[in-house]
Length: 435
Figure 1 (cartoon, rainbow, N blue to C red):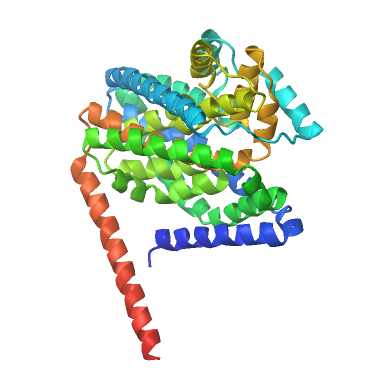
Figure 2 (cartoon, rainbow, N blue to C red):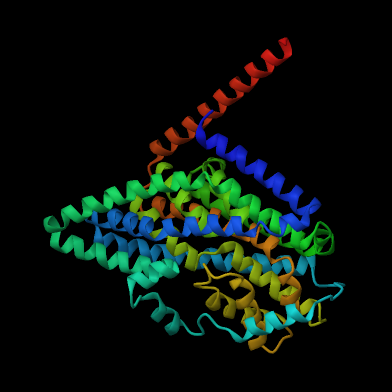
């Protein structure tokens, strides 16, 4: 059995053990959060050098600087369309499921104080401020804080400079190629710690919330996950069909990173492996290197949908019926404020609280959502990852640069692996039956 399949099994085992320990031994489970933190820190130390090396090689290695501007415009255009659809689906789901209607308010003073602090904090207020923060004052600081967009901006200019001096930069480009190969291998090694990190994240979440929290918040949880499913089936699958790429193939390819994103509720944890897989799937290195990290600023489909649903939930529980005009204004505000929200803990709640506060609506709903934010975050983070992987395929197809033969080889290889595993299991069962 291949290492990848063994790792997936270990992750599933870690999930089950985490739920069991957190539910039946909450005192022990509550102390396991540090395992998740250690694993996520290991992932974070990979991202900056891997992203920088991959993007510079993707652009400078092909010497195609002019093309990156065209790719950038197409990417942002696609992101805006998809996130607008996500907002609309979140809004419709809020009206259909009405998760805030009849909800019994039970909020602690601690939660209310936390949300008040969130409402007073702003990650950026204007487009000009957002654009200003895109340009790093120090690449060292950008890498240290994990600001993906600033790393992308620096890497773009760095790649252009390499193309300008041509042969003189070849030794450094060769070094970056080696660095990229090393970091991908580094990623494989770190991924073996994933089951430990996932166990800590799940056990801690269940220990602090308990099984009963799922029943108390069932309507909200169901509404979000149903809306996310609608988005995946009605938007992402259609996008894949337009590109003539099997959605099942993408899901099968990124099943490992998707499970990791769901378990840890962290996009960063899944990013390095997802980038590696999408390259093998047929998307060029330069498109993967540009679209994936940019997507974690401009294309957070799951988080954007959640913001729309959360705003409606927050107004419904206090009996406010928003007019169509009010809803449109709020959606426009969310379209602007939801950009650049990746990488900050509970940032979706910060944006939601700030938006409600700016329109003069009560923020008590955000305090209620705070209690189950980890559970909701698991779903929206997974959809963020899937959405960005699909985005790389769409942009590659748009550029007529998607390698269908490479995709087919990848899919066939995965099918052969699954067939071999089934045969192995069948033979093992036959031997056990004979015994």
